[in-house]
Image (cartoon, rainbow over all chains, first blue to last red; front, side):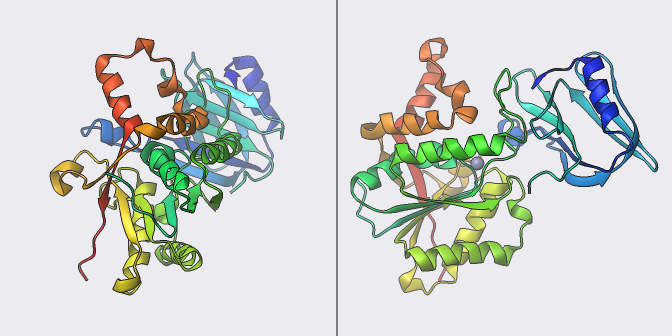
Length: 116
Length: 225
Ligand SMILES: [Zn+2]
């Protein structure tokens, strides 16, 4: 993965628009967050292989970026995206790595389902 | 304390590297005694947050990287029977409870271990660790008392010492420290941060790492009946 280049990422988001795609969306503080800091309220969300179709995908802002997908009946968005790649299987993998390099958020788009 | 001979040791953990942190030295010592060790690793740590800094992995390439690391770590520990159980990281607790018990029961029936090493339910911090320990304990509880394998349980929640006291089983693994370090180093994507050269470490960090490398402690899980 490399750091977000807005025009390149925008072009990739455009290329998946108006197609049935599978998404992986994840936010995480890590399962140990409340172990290291008992006052830390640990929350996160995960969805993998939800099938959606978006009409408009947009990357916005300075790094860490926001990426939003507008669908006929709703929205998908991720905040904190810093890195991206189009992998060898043609899947758009975006991730937000925190200041220590740990993954904090991931948004991935693929025309075929992700593995299990 | 010295390790007793065992018929067969079954190690059950959810993530590649759980075994290295908690038990690499103990496993190596058993293997050096000629005791067979089977490691059932439930997931490939697909949801690990360390992708390298700068990142050399992606969310999608991480499982294959960790699979190779796990195999290399098993070589360092001398484990010849590694079972990758195909569950997904962070979903173990959402699997059907009976399916999880059966997974463990099937392993016990096949392997007939005299000792199982796993996490102590209630004191294992990560939800996957908790679910793994729960499944093992329940599977063993269902075995008639006289033929149950012993359970060495790893607990590291902040309240473990308060609730369970000092762990009664303490293995000095300093004689195989090099192998433990090699196992930890094999899990490079997850351990690079702590295996870096030692010169920048504080005294406190060095002491903590030394105890990780030299001592492995367990609670003996006991049943009411
Ligand atoms: Zn773990």
